[in-house]
Image (cartoon, rainbow over all chains, first blue to last red; front, side, top):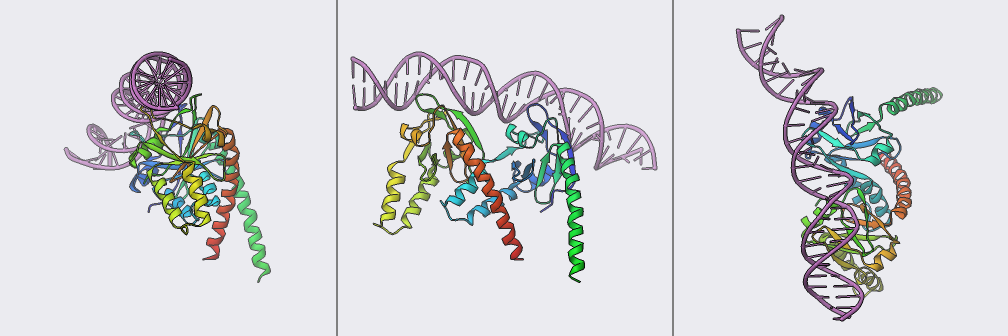
Amino acid sequence: MEPFVSSFQNKIDKKGRVSVPAAFRSIVVANGLNQIFCYSALDVPAVEAGGKPLLTKIYQLLEDLPPYSEERDILSTALFGGSENLKIDNDGRIILPEAMREHAKITDHVTFVGMGDKFRIWSPQIFEEYMAEARIKAISHRKLFADAHKKSM
Amino acid sequence: MEPFVSSFQNKIDKKGRVSVPAAFRSIVVANGLNQIFCYSALDVPAVEAGGKPLLTKIYQLLEDLPPYSEERDILSTALFGGSENLKIDNDGRIILPEAMREHAKITDHVTFVGMGDKFRIWSPQIFEEYMAEARIKAISHRKLFADAHKKSM
DNA sequence: TGGATAACTATGGAATATCATGGTTTTTTA
DNA sequence: TAAAAAACCATGATATTCCATAGTTATCCA
């Protein structure tokens, strides 16, 4: 399966319409449906999205839990209840629902970021801040890792 | 079979009439009947609902229990005794019975929440509280899942 | 190789269809 | 026969489809 790579910035109009980058779109369509399965990311202010394989993954995760258990009900509520199956229209666009735009603080532009088996949709400004943060953390993590490595030698 | 995904908020009038979201309705109809099978959820203040497949599943669940056992008696009474087959009218609406509205503390609005193979009908306020909890639990579950995955490598 | 042409992409706007919802009339039934 | 339930109808809002255009990239052929 071809991975989602690179990032693209597109405009989103007041109705919430936005073009899915052609590169991502062709991957999704090749995987079976011309629908984008997406949900508000649990730990970052962004929308997480993918094609049929992502949906299948969630199915499998839930199937491992006993049917009609409380745990399964809770997870399926969070995962399915908070998700959307967005149809890609003839012009290659989707409509990003209000709730998700709010969660990701999206106003007039969005950045699509490839993550291999899925991709994320960000507000461009917030994505840059997040990346800057991530870089700093990565540096300190690497230092920690290097120190630990030294000690163990 | 297509899953119930996403959530929708609709109004319910004083007669108890409420539109079933078109997305859910088409799934139910595609599965055979123009009816919604539903009952008061056992452990949450909500109405649990689905199409023909849900009914079949519950039958199977009960059949797996030892016949004439207390557990089976209690469950079948709770599920079937309090269940209803609500007809979808020409405008796509159902009438939610008084008893169920009471159980779910529903007044003027309801939230339909997709859960894959079934869906729930909530009072919007109560659902929001439950959803916030569910998201937190989903995060910790995902971490558990990631750890287990690491260990197995 | 270079210029022209054709295809594709992103985007805006308008036309169309669908959906949710309130109200009214008819039918049922208690 | 009165009350409740079901079917019917109307309408505004919303979502979906369709069309147009400008900019870009790819293709083709002399």
